[in-house]
Image (cartoon, rainbow, N blue to C red; front, side):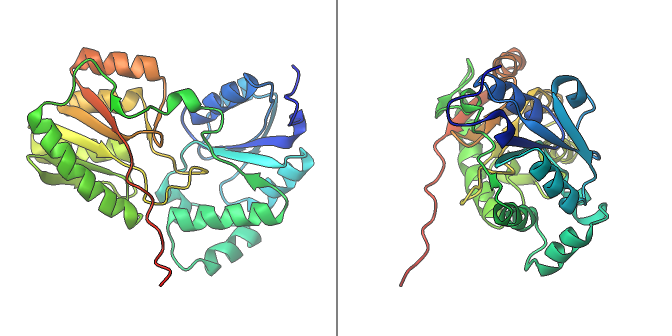
Length: 286
């Protein structure tokens, strides 16, 4: 397969976590004539990657030095991180090598953004640019508007308006990006467990009452990592949990299997609406 004019085949690498995200990136890159070397995280990535990736190496979550060595070995100049690495694994389950241990010790805050941001800087120092993880996935980023046959009704719209205020506040604190709302009251706020488990927790608390799910990007969302995602499993969890509406940020939320996801939402009577994200805050220069 021919490469694009601007990038040789050896220049691109994929650091793969769990879920469908890595597969979609590989497919999107190939549609542009780019074959990526894959560094797959053993504790997270699917074994199916071995079937679809032409060049693949497995590393454990704490092996930062080996990851860099492999990227250099493959001639990678531009890397994409795709696929979730569960937050609790990052800070409790890994055995860091000397390089990652040093990096962890230097972090002022022990959150995911701080860690991945620091890893990005290490890669940059090594001559490897970490790029926007959605670079090859433009069609999966929805524009603003109602995406399903049904728009949110008046009660759902009120919960969405309230939920977006709360979600933006917690996202700004890097606590999570999802809230679940009932009658303009927060039922559950995402922490380290992820969107689907937050919805399931809300369902247990609400005892079968109707719920609304709101998912936002961070005020200064770094599209290189931790991009908000919704997939078919999220719709199934919402259906089981009597969550009848989903609000997301337009242009900053990936909808995996978009056509199938919207069809499933329509079949379940779930309304999905994408909203223009709030403008990125500017730093006070005074």
